[in-house]
Image (spheres, rainbow, N blue to C red):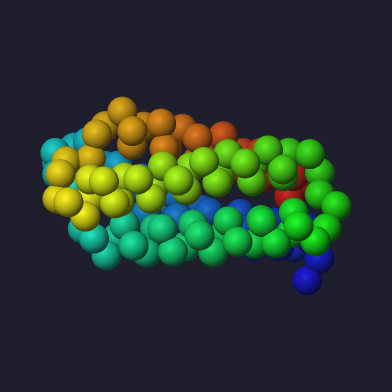
Length: 119
């Protein structure tokens, strides 16, 4: 599998993760409660799989510049997602809307850069 194929596979994984992320944000914003644990775990695992593909491609192939920026932003986004999970979700505290929105915003920018690099 070449690097562009890996980036394109990562795009598909991030689309799946984004669907879960939108559902979780909707639960938090519209219902005022945290999403179920299983949804957060699936979201994180699928996003981590996509991030792993991008990181592997970046380490072992010469990628377009947007892919490097996408990797950086998606790593920061992953850190934010881990913080949301460990500091609020697992402690059964309401997720702070501001942190959820920053997490989502960074994810969108990273995803757009990834799409630019992959296609």
